[in-house]
Amino acid sequence: MTEAEELKARISQLPRGSLSTKKVCGRIYHYHRISENGKRREQYVPETEVPALEEGIRERRRLEKQLRGLTVRESGKQSPDEWRCTVLSGSALIPFAAPVAGWKKRTCFTALQEFVSGAPQDKVLILCGLRRTGKTTLLRQLIAAMNEKERDRASYVQLSVRQTLADLNQDLKRMQRLGIDTVLIDEVTLLSDFIDGSALLPDIFAASGMHIVLSGTDSLSFMLAKSGQLYDRCRMIHTTWIPFGEFARVLGIRDVDTYIRYGGTMTMSGTHYNPQNSAFRSLRTVDEYVNTAIADNIQHSLSCWQDGTHFRNLQDLHEQGELTGAVNRIIEDVNHRFTIEVLTRTFRSHDLAVSARNLRQDRTHPDDILDHIDERAVTDRLKEWLKIAEEEEMTVGIEQVHVQEIHEYLEVLDLIREVEVRSIPQSSRKRYRTLITQPGLRYAQASALIQALSEDPIIDALDLHDRESLKERILSEIQGRMLEDIVLLDTMARWPEKEVFVLQFALGEFDMVIFDPEKLQCEVFEIKHSKIHVRNQARHLTDPENCRKTEFRFGPITRRTVLYRGETCEEDGILYQNVEEYLTQPVTQRNEQPAAGHSAR
Image 1 (cartoon, helix red, strand yellow):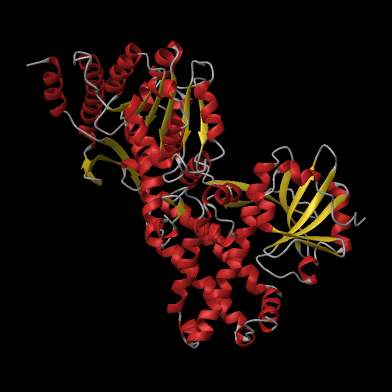
Image 2 (cartoon, rainbow, N blue to C red; image 1 turned 90 degrees about the vertical axis):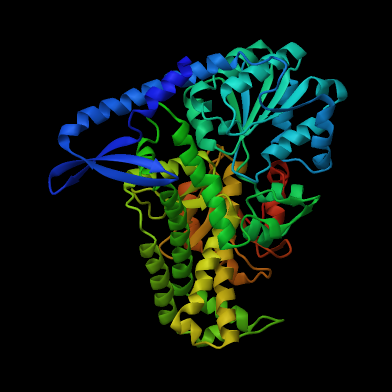
């Protein structure tokens, strides 16, 4: 019997899983947890048997680690002339890259190309982001941009769960012998030993002059590796957030409503945008995306991670088989709160009356449906419906520590960001609004909730025309709030040196304020999901008391702008700017643009 076979035989005799405890009525009970086929099974363990079980689990883990090390050593005995992984080199790269050669490139392509063409840095470059955000396409475009000499010295490696770092190590050694100095490694996080052994790549191969680019959808694995094995040995390019300007430039779509419905992925069909293939075309596809692109990746990372202290509370949920449900719950909760806030704001204020007036005065399709709505009944029913949905979905017993760690992960993933909500008079407690960087994900979940309201008796009692008009109106309000979030997110990214926030008053708010702490001046904005401009849209911007209070705290107001979907124009000192123009306008061009209006001091 070989050493590996002997180790496997010893491991098979030892207990799997982990030991957990539960406190019931002041007493401690012990349970042996085992996961089989994705399901968790627990068995009560008497107190007297606990020490032996703990020792057996520790011994099994020690032997499993020993077996992995032995596998790495023995794998070097394979023939050096055989590729262990799927490798494309030289002329084989041409047909692989050709289909995307004519596609427009994401903004981060320049940084990727500069890393590969520059001097070796003893570091690896990581392309990190969710599925369908263009990582593999970026690698193929990089190959397509190479000349023949560069291509002859490059290789593309596709990994799978069948390979290990030992396999990759042997292939990289062979590439060194062949004179290959640029290696693009796709789906590297599928390697079960990547997190705990990734230092091999910068310390051995990048230090020897190789340019190594790593790509993968498992962002948590990259983060864990960066905090350990790859600490100070890597650069990262994040692909998850796709701003409207980039979406418009690469896919040729300049319509902000299309971005609201489908934005967040780079879905291509040939050279044309294909919304029918979007991950966000329905609630079912959204659920699949959340499961495979987010929740499953966390579970995979924690399964492969042998040591460490980060996300230890998520490890507990993972062992219970409840992690995926918890992640879904947090993302849905963020969207439910968003939907409730939009609807509450819409129906509780005079905005409903404004909407009703706008619908009556619509030049093409006038409608008085909102004049006949029972405002209080509809508001209460909508809020009740959504809160019931929240309660029914709370099947997982998650605590605040789990919520905090999942939020931390989603921030690492660039899926959520926070914008500060300030107030006058100033509050001592800071408040934030959660922005989801993939608008299509938020819109699909929110619209599915509204669609479900058709089952409600109050809504169902309306005739078809009135029912559909109401749902369209509600969805329009959701799109309006999403447009605010899109503008806030884009503006924070464009001007990191400035303070971007929402400013609320006792009556009314500025949808966005940009404060320049160096020049001690600010700009104020209203953001409307409308194609027509009316004076009422700027009522907060022209309120003398609110403007006086704003200038007292943030300096002179140099520009007052209403961002909307119509034509750009100026009226009574207010700039009405097309929002798609704003989101695609270069920073330098905007800084050179003369300010509209004047200080309201």
